[in-house]
Picture 1 (cartoon, rainbow, N blue to C red):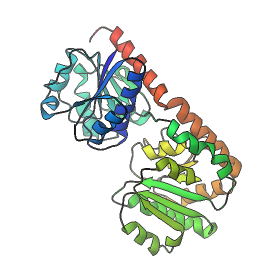
Picture 2: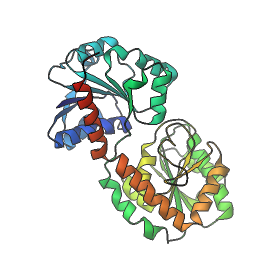
Picture 3: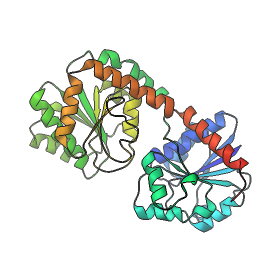
Length: 349
């Protein structure tokens, strides 16, 4: 099978990660796979590292003037700017898949719905995205849910040391956030203050966007001596290995790669009940779900986990198993390959 993944993301984000690692897996299984992306993007560079064929996504290509002959599948990843002309040309030679990973506005989903004549299957990265497809007017039979993939091997070592980590005190509670409004970090620090009032020996860690105002927020709450602010890091598996509990305090809908990475590392996660974020968490099984925007609710969950080592161990194991069984690169790639085969066997609409 010949598969072309198309991604115009200029960031190294969850979208680019999916386009790269699925293509790499397809190639490893003997298929012809390539990624069409911007030549100066991190994705293009990462393709070189994994020896995945990368083709430059030029302005001419974006307008629909690119060669699709020879590709059985053209799979577009999170491309809000897709035009009917673009897809009509691509569909003349290939079957079309559109994956939406991010939860956007209602208008963005309605634009995707207008492309139905040219799309064989819409793929949502979580149940919430699939629901938005249907709300926008897309035929439910032309939607499918495929979770985001993760290269489990990078995170497995962190998982293996967790049983021993849960025996150590004090606990370290962490989060990873690139929220430039700092609302997420502020809620995390407010939660930390509540925890420290009950368990003053607990330590905290914030990784992500570099902004000195985060330290100022911690000082304002009188807890700066208990909070490590590490900015953006490239050694996230090692960071996850140091965490006992991961607390996500986002109030915005959407998936979080760091949350999935924490689960893959066997870190018990406290997650707000928000579309996307809580889609892959079963309360009290592979994580704890709390009310969004409520630092006290989050703090209570963290305090309970700190005081219950068996619960931490159980949630840790189930979290890892869930990601390993449902989101590992081989599993996700196989699901996609089967959906490609099914569509190729169907007559064109």
